[in-house]
Each structure stands twice: as C-alpha cells, then as structure tokens.
Amino acid sequence: MDVCRQLRADSRTSTVPIIMLTARAAETDRIVGLEVGADDYVTKPFSPRELVARVRAVLRRAAAPPVDGGAVIRRGALLIDKGRHEVLYNGKPLSLTATEFRILEFLASRPGHVLSRDQIINTALGSDAAVTDRTIDVHMTSLRRKLGDGGKQIETVRGFGYKFRDAADDSESH
Image (tube, rainbow, N blue to C red):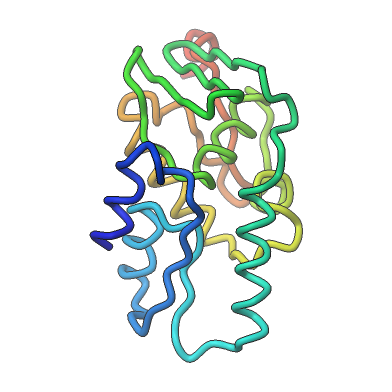
C-alpha cells in the first residue's frame, strides 16, 4: 500500500499501471488497495491465465491513445485536460489513478446522461476488463472523496449506474 501511494504521488511514476497481487482478500483490503491507486487487485489463489488476462487489460488501457488528446472538459470548478492527463478542481490538481481519470472523463463528457456500470466498464475500462460492478462503486467512492465538494456532481442512480451532474444542473434539481 505504501509503495503504491509513493508511486502515485511521484509525477514520474503516477501513471504506471499497478496490479496488487496479494493474499489479503477482505473487502476492506481490496477497497483500500484500489483507493490508494491500484488499477486492479488480484487475490490468492488466482489462475495464472486470469492474471495474464488482467495484466494485458491493464497494459492495453494504459497504452491506449486518448480519444481526443487535446480536449479540455470544463464542468463548473472541474477542469479535465485530457492531453496533459491532469484534473483540477477549484484550481487545485487532483491525484487520480489512470482508471479514475478515465471514469471521470467518461462521466464528465456526458453530463446529465445516466450511464450503467456496464457502460462505464466497457467504455472507460475496456470490454475485456476483469472488473465487477463493485469495483466501479469503489472507484466512484474514491473519486467522490478526492473531489471533495465536487464529488456531489457524481450522482448514483439506484439500480442502474451513475450520472455526472453539471454545476448548472444544481439550480434545476432539488
């Protein structure tokens, strides 16, 4: 966990894909591992074929060129610079994992649209990603925490998925 935190905190290694391979299988351990920056979390015992598939999926996602490398998404106090792979909230940089960045970019580029967990997995992570609905929930919790007040823009749509509420939506709802 400490090594993962250090890698994510250093700008030279912050985008290096990380898969935790461990005997610690409790849900809290998996959640903490993903929240500190792991892109995937595999527990023992594991299938070597599954591990290879997970490594390939993480490497594919890390190597994939951005869809629109120079685009900047602005949503209220949130700024996502896809070309620089940077996220600012209220002018302050956020340290996101590569997976968190892709999920936030996917949601923020479709404000107001309800996106299922499957859509998020398939589009932001790749259709062959070996993740569960719960993994997406963990990433959403981590994103909300890192965004602070801005985390309220990620809305859970019970029984379906998530949507990104633009700041302009706040005046229309509730």
